[in-house]
Image (cartoon, rainbow, N blue to C red; front, side):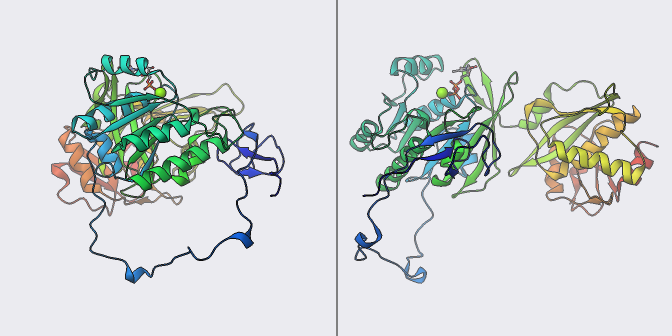
Amino acid sequence: MAKPVTQFACTDCGAIHKKWTGRCDNCGAWNTIQEEVPLSQGPSRKALGTAKGRRVALTDLQTEEAPPPRTLSGLGELDRVLGGGLVPASATLVGGDPGIGKSTLLLQAAAAFAREGQPVIYVSGEEATAQVRMRAQRLGLGDSPVKLAAETNLRDVLTTLEAERPALAIVDSIQTMWVDTVESAPGSVAQVRACAQELTQFAKRFGTAVVLVGHVTKEGQIAGPRVVEHMVDTVLYFEGERGHQFRILRAVKNRFGPADEIGVFEMTGGGLAEVANPSALFLGDRDAPAPGSVVFAGIEGTRPVLVEIQALVAPSQLAQPRRAVVGWDGSRLSMILAVLEARTGISFAGLDVYLNVAGGIRISEPAADLAVACALLSAREDAGVPPETVVFGELSLSGALRPVAQAENRLKEAAKLGFTAAMAPRGCKTGDAGGIALRLLPDLATLVGEVFGA
Ligand code: TYD
Ligand code: MG
C-alpha cells in the first residue's frame, strides 16, 4: 500500500494544499492551513470489483413514492427553516459562533420532539450529562424524555445510536468527535470530515434525522462548519449580534425545502422564545423618526420583515473618509454613494458615512438599495423622510429604480404595522397595496427633487 503523504488542509473551507502557505488560495483566509494525515487511499484500481456496481434508469424508478414524511420538531420557527419539519434519514448542520445559543436551541428542539413521543438522543461532546441536565432544568425541560450521552469517541457514539435507533440524534459538536482511523487531533479537517461522513451514513442507513452542531471558528486551529457543508442535506446558521437578544436561524442550503428561509428567536432568561412577528420586534424599540432613519420593507425567505435603516453623515477629519456598515454589504454602500454622486450630483466626499441596520439583523436583498439611498440623503440633507412611510426598491447604476418582487406582501406587512405610505419603484406589482398611499418613483433624480427638495 502506498505510504500516506502528508498534506495541508484549510480549516476554514477544507481545501487541500500540497505545501503549507500563510494564506489559503481557495478562500483567501489567513493562517488557516494545518498539516493533515490523509485517509488511506483505499484499494487500487485493479482491485476494484465491478460486480456490485449497479445503475438504474431514471424512468424505472417508482414515481408514486410520497415526498419524504416530515416530523415536526415542535419548535415552529425551526420547522419553518427546515422547510416544514425534520426529514428522516437526513443530516442537518447547525453552525454558529460559540455562545450564540446552538446547544440551547437544539436541547429545546430535542425536548419538544421527545414530548411528541419520538425517541431522541442528545450526544454532548462538550458538556457532561449533569451539565446538560442542569441546563434542561433551567429551561424548564427537566422532565422531558430525552436521552443524554456524553461521548467524543465516534465508535461509542455510533454504538449507542445503533442500539437505541432514535428518530432524532443531535451531536454537539462535530468538532469534539474523533475516530480512531484518523491520526490527527479532534477538530482537524480530517477528523471533522470523517466523523461527519460516518454520522451522515448512519442517518441514511437507519432512517434517523441527525443534527450536527458546528462552531464557526475565528482562527485556524479548529475546522469550521464549512468543511462539512457539502456532505449534509441541510445547512442552517444561527446568527445574532452580541448585545442583541434576537437570534436568526438561516437556511443556506436545503435539499428538502427553500434556502434563505429564516426563523427568528429571542434569547430570554428561560431559553429561546420563538418570535412569530419579527417586524414588530425589530421596530419595537424605534426612536422617534429622525433624519437618517428609514423603514425598509424587506422579504426574508418567504416572510416580509420590516427593519429600520439608520445613516449618519458627518464631516471627516481623515484624508480618506470612513465608510462603516453594520448589517449590510460595504461594497454595495460604496456603489450607492457613487450612483448618488454621479446621477444627482450629491457628493459625500469629505464626509464620514455610517450605516446601521437596527436590531442586529443582516440584510442581503438588493431591494434595500432605495431605503439606504433615502437614509443617506435624509442624513446628508438633514431632512426626514415623510412619517409612517416604508421604502423598498433596487437601484441600477444609471440611477433608475428597478421594481422588486413581492411588493404586495411588503405593503401588506407595512399596513399591518400601522404604516400609511410607501415609496417604491415605478412598475412594482402592488396589488391593492393594503390601503397604503403609494409614491412610485422612476429614478433617483425624481426622489431627490420630490422628496428631499435638493
Ligand atoms: P449556548 O446554547 O451554550 O451556546 P452555543 O452552544 O452556541 O455555544 O448558549 C450560551 C449563551 O446563551 C450563554 O451566553 C447564555 C445564554 N443563555 C441565556 O441567555 N438564557 C438561557 O436560558 C440559556 C440556557 C442560555
Ligand atoms: Mg454549545
